[in-house]
Length: 606
Image (cartoon, rainbow, N blue to C red; front, top):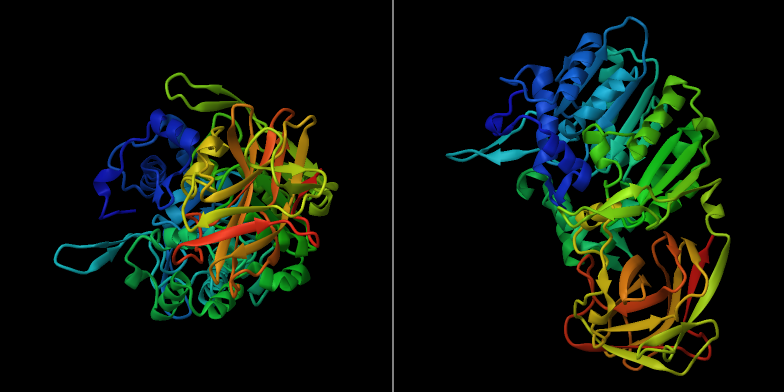
């Protein structure tokens, strides 16, 4: 495959590059693929299509390409959609007259389209699958050329991005048509990561001929509307990152209607239309079709997901009655599986291996134990064992985090514990968390300022570090009490196994007509540094000065072990850079606990 815009940038893959990907993940920021990950993928493709002018792979990767070439034919077709748009695709067709199953892989939302996961396509071929990967319409690198105009990379598809809309669903069925004509597959599965995972679910549910036999959805969404806008709060940073990560200028990547929708979202207007637009693009909206078709569906998500928060994915999973599996991992979007889809590891990459095992069982018919898997398997924060690398100063995981299997999500939480917000903690100037109600107190702070209490430093990369053994450390003494309120328990005498969805109830008063609250739960060690357990924002409007408003909202689900002698901390502030907020000027937020409804936190245990 020729890459006219970067022919000279494919360098020889080195052990250092592979080590970098394994140690840091595939993202260098929320809007950039690490150059090492991109180079590995492009080097694999260049070797397969013969455009590499010299050896660019490590011996193991070179051997992998040779093994696949011996048993399959490699292709790079462009598939014509119903409206004439050309979709860039890549095929690996096994050299056999025996019908074999096919895995279709719609690419994620990255400038590199289908190229990024070439390593996985080769692995699928060795497992006995035909492979057809394609870039969804509009996705992929589009670069300006001297003198004006633009040129698309070969892995870029035509058209404009439909954001998993009706055109993407239709394109998926067109790709299946192409596959049936050229592969005559015995069975068909879809495997997708991020954007490709949502498209995979939607195509499976909507294909007119019901031709999809299984789905793997990694770092996925169930409800796109809730992912973008929940509790009357817009997830601004996530959408801004996605807009910046299409591979080209916004006026070329989106049509007028989609640009207007995105502009409305960013401006906070016509949100009812934005929600309807998101619901149309939500696998949860077609859960009944998925159930009617009995499509075995595998989910993999993270606790601290910043693009598609975990609660909406769990809610979708719960609605499905098909054979299903939900893996929940430490970290953020794509952190568990990203590197494993891109390159080999010295040992198994469990998130990817379990996904492929799901396909082997439901598509190849392998008797590999998948049929006996419990429906839910949760990795518990932050139970891994680590050592410090003397060269980098970063932690390196020496023992993986504990995982807990449960027969259903309902079995994850076995009891709850109520912690009441109190006027003061026993040994600190903050409010307390106790087992008995305490009313009549109030806590005030000046709203509208960012504080050190924040969900993440950066989308994706904070979670990548967390996945690799380096969760963010919060210096709680630096939390500016002028702009937030804090409640802390005493040192715990016994461990707490947090399992499920926490819920917070309190009474609010604001000097403004609208305000935003962001609640965070932290695990505080004896030295007053903390790790985040979970969080969630809430925006309130139509408030009257002096009016008390009782509010209850759910935080994002968590699987977290609080150990003895640590403290549980609840922080409420008014602003986080992930989200929109209601603050346009100075205002004061007052949190109280009334005789009618004592302020409290319901902690799920399991």
